[in-house]
Image (tube, rainbow, N blue to C red; front, side, top):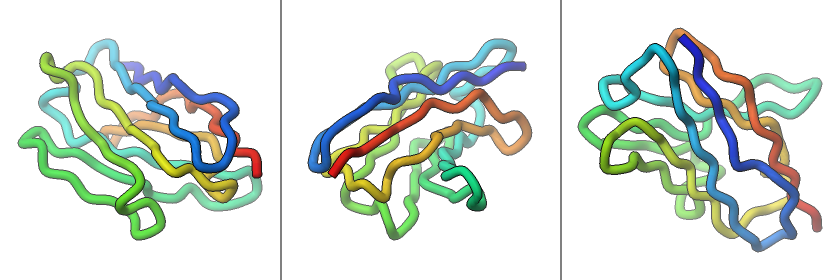
Length: 110
């Protein structure tokens, strides 16, 4: 099983990015998918999750700015990030509770 996050990049504060999470060997639509982020030297931090039912929740630090969703097939999970702040700079990962994918780097400049 492999999960892969993509879509990171460099953006100015106030900008937006959309991250994607895809998997091989795993039906994403049947799993709760979490998004986490990590700044080097710091602990990994929960960002958001989406359940197979579509229910979701967010860390307080991103609530109202980030939205997690699935595509129509359920095979891709997105993290739409708006109103980005420099403190959102981190390596972002998706996870199904067991497997971690390679992260994607988000850098927000002030």
